[in-house]
Amino acid sequence: MKQYSAWILLLLCLILSSGCSDGGDSSGNSSEAQRLLARFGALEPSFTESGMQGLLDYPDSGGPVTLVQLISVTDTEAFARYEEQAAALWESIGATERFRSEVFARFIGHRSLTRVRVIEFPGAVVMLSAIDTPAFTDLMNSLAAASDDHVWVLGEQSPLPLKPGGSYFDPALQNLDRDEALALLSANTPETGDGAEFGSDSDVLIDMVVSDAPGPFWMVNLIDFYQRANFPDGRDTDLSGAEANQIYGNTILPTLLRYNSLPEILMPVAVVLTDEEIAWEQAAIVRYASRDAFLNAFALNPTADEALVYKAAGVENTLVYASEVPGTVLPAPQTGPLFNYRYCEVLLVFEEQQGLRADVYNSMLLNNCPQDAWDGLNAQQIASDFGADAAALNGVRFWVLDGIQSTTLPVLPVIENFGGIPMRLAASVELATDTDIGEAAYQINRVSRDTVFHYAAGRQVYELQNPQGIRYRMQSFTRGVDANQQLVDLQRLGQRLALPDGWSFHVDLLSEDSALPTVNGIAEVITDDLDNTYQRIP
Image 1 (tube, one colour):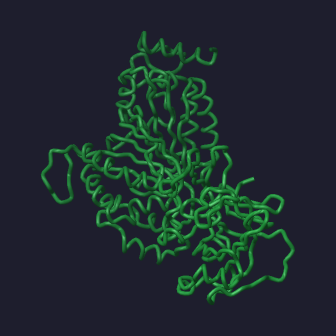
Image 2 (image 1 turned 180 degrees about the vertical axis):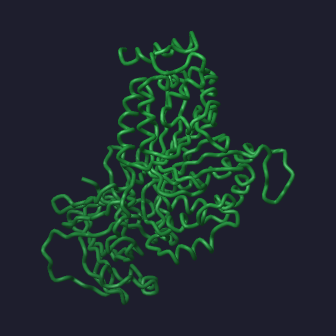
């Protein structure tokens, strides 16, 4: 209770009188708004008396209020000292930092704002109490030494029905240079691209295409609407600018969901505290699952123009910054030699006293399994040729791991030729006793091998979880069931699988290198109903 005594006293002063004097240099003849403005110390010129009056007049709804700060930092060490002071002051009055990010690209606008902070206060009166203290003046003097431009806006966050999350990876956008990026954008960008009508920097889009950064980023927006919607084609309309922008938001939402991207903060602006030429009306912070997600939703999506025309009609002025949240920035995965590597397998099945055994032959490192030769294979003929009880064709497959390490001593490989495709014996598998070859989804098969599968940091991984909480990570996907399945399809695989009761599908992004070993020379392997394969995580 002691930590709140100071702000409770100040709160009562603000309610019961024109303010309480603390012996400072404020003049009794100054207005309350002017007195509050003076509390900003060296930063006073960046703020306005009208902003202070808006804060004083803010209706007390009894709920929290949110302050969005965009700051241009010129001295990172001084800013770090400011952050320490700010954390202590916000904690002392019960305020909470809800969001922080660092700008990596200015997308639209000419102001070099580099830090984003979102602070939630228990109420507007509590925020006033914090401002009306010597500690706040000290805080602003520290910030003045660290920065040279500010935008502060205040409001109450609109409730959002869905929480953003998930990752997104598009292999077609990997390892592209600037010329390839420019060609891709030129071929796909809609005529009215996101931000094109506001003079957005095309270099930012090129950098996004070239970057293979796998993690999420946040697009920070400040928006000023036309009073009446102003469509590029000059059509008559009764829509306000805000209404046109709302149509844009409703139209683009399914696309954002498709790429695991959603608004994280959406706030109508009630008070602009800083000295602005533009009366900002909305603040929005949208989380995109990755640069790939943003590009697929907008720059590489010709149909996005259908929604963007409403954005262009609704938004008169905007600032847009691409930012990253500390702790979410991952290095681009250093793709190992096996990632997305094409291969195929032939399984020779033998019935033994203890059950079924399958000798697995694959084409890895010998060839890329030519499609014509693969299409010509006949499982019954192969079984007859090799004296097996049955044979199964497994492919064409693609690894989703980066490397395989064998813990056994190398031996002379056993190589057989299947219809012109040389393959080596890779493993022997003990099949589940009730396995029906070709219909073994979600059954555990024990594979005899000593290997460690390696997945690179920044890699998106795909996992199944059974009702007991045991997880299985995908090692490869196949086109044996769905001839059109692509690597990019795997992140939405959970929507296609006929999972047994209690099973679930997950997509995760690795923050560090990961190793998946066998246990005592045995790997427990399952397949899903599209025949993609997974190994149990110990």
